[in-house]
Image (cartoon, rainbow, N blue to C red; front, side, top):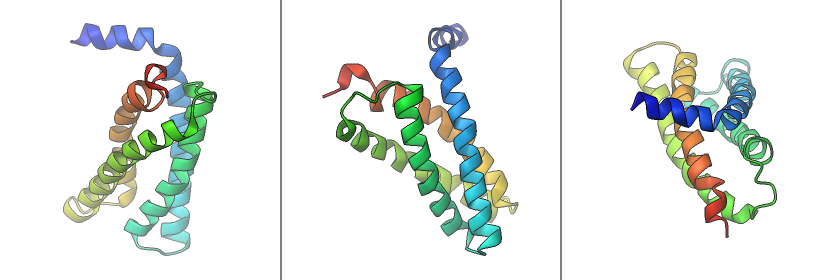
Length: 139
């Protein structure tokens, strides 16, 4: 199984590198927005996560569509509904992980942001590569 993972990473290394760069950029936007809404504006952590998530999503979709997966020529509507399905899953994971970190573990929601980002990054790459921007399934 490990050899399969290594082989997959080697075959898709260029996209994985782009995905990683975009991921760090979007993570910076996400954390920056969360900090602004949570610390500066004084909003509840659940609302702050939600607002930051929406802003991060816009950056995430556009950068991956144009840069990572080079899918700008493909049908936008086709990508959008698939991306929204992925977002629903990732949003539930993000909010759930942050909730666990704050309410169960009793530590800062910033740790939840980091943990949920790691989990959703893996989900996102595979869903975008093989579902959202999959050229074989383009309409």
